[in-house]
Image (tube, rainbow, N blue to C red; front, side, top):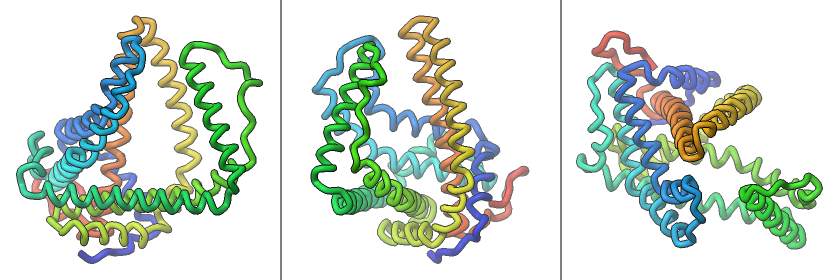
Length: 317
């Protein structure tokens, strides 16, 4: 379980490999990722269906949705993610894969380790959130915090007004309070830490799923590898930030145009098609992200390269 510095340009290679994630046995790989994305969406489905058919939000669904989301995130999604990484790894090695492999974690004895690692990851997120809030409180006085709270409530009220179909004149938008800049600086400063912790947890999950590592050791290895390779990862973000923002803006405009066309078919049909489009985009983005994470784990935590493949067309990482 030795970790490595992968090189300054390594994350760019991982991204190139990730864009081609569906090259090997794409039907099984992409269907596994689509299933994982859909299961993660399930807790919010009741509220979405209520809104879809024009109903009023049910207050009782809020706590139920949150509880269901926690159960899915802790007990189901870790197993599905592990299954996705196993399928991707085997497919890239030229080994046959099948959809039932997505559920291997429920029956091969790794379920406890995957859940424990995920729970420890949640604990890290909570500690990081507390640290961020303490720093925000240290750089922002009580009066500014109260102004920020009032400003946020005004924005939420305007959002509810817009969702009800009532137009909002520009002069009604509240001016940003003075403490907003300091709070934004704290959020910006902590953003890389959130990214490194998330990547380290995922690399730890792969270690448990593919190598049977103990959860604590796998998590520590993943975190060490993420922070050891922090500089190349930051360089990747810096280089791609503006292009990604531009492409995202164009895709959002395209998405809005397609959603408007779908609504011409009727409110319910239009919203169903829009929802399907959103899920499709989520599957593509998730597939690239999982490919990037797996390539990074190989380079920093595992052997770094795929062994000679048994199927024609396989490639080295």
